[in-house]
Length: 214
Image 1 (cartoon, one colour):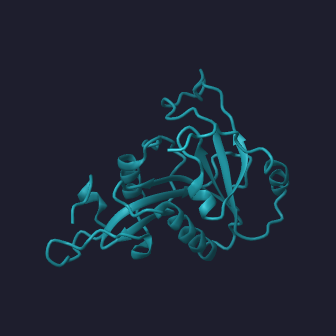
Image 2: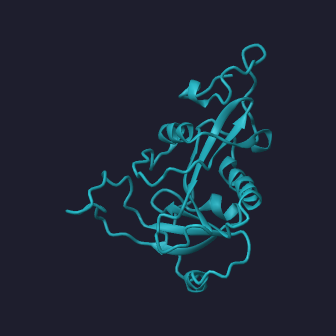
Image 3: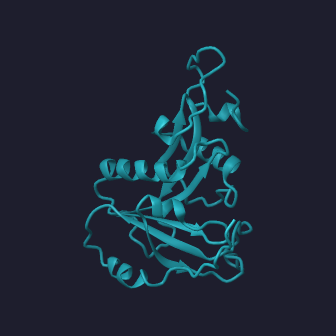
């Protein structure tokens, strides 16, 4: 089996014995499984695969809640979860998908399949979590993977073309200044007052330009 890019770091268990030259690449997400992986491995593969946000500069992304899609001992996608970056959102009851990066040789539909599996896993492992949130870069993505996994578009975060840095707070150069579409997935009912924001935000999705037919 030919593994594309970063072959050694993609191996889940280095001492796992593979028959012959190795197994064949999965042709469907159903041939893989989602497992928790170390943060450093998730970061390294995100840097290798993510087209827009390869760096993870923020010191606040320290979460150990990282998942990988593994098939025959090789990783084909990684995801990093943490507390919401927006401080006004509930920091304990909500979880944000900070990164989702997929290998170029991953089976089709891997992202939406992985979102579905992680949603069920988080619902079981963390009964206090009531909402999942993630942000779509509207410049290059249409949100298909979220919609396919049953997520709902809510607010459009339309940032100006300027950096977050200022004289007091210096940050590395932004990796993307495009408007961000926020997607949410409710796991269970909540009494948090922030849910009132959801009631008004469903009518404010990002207005994306029409794409010409291929």
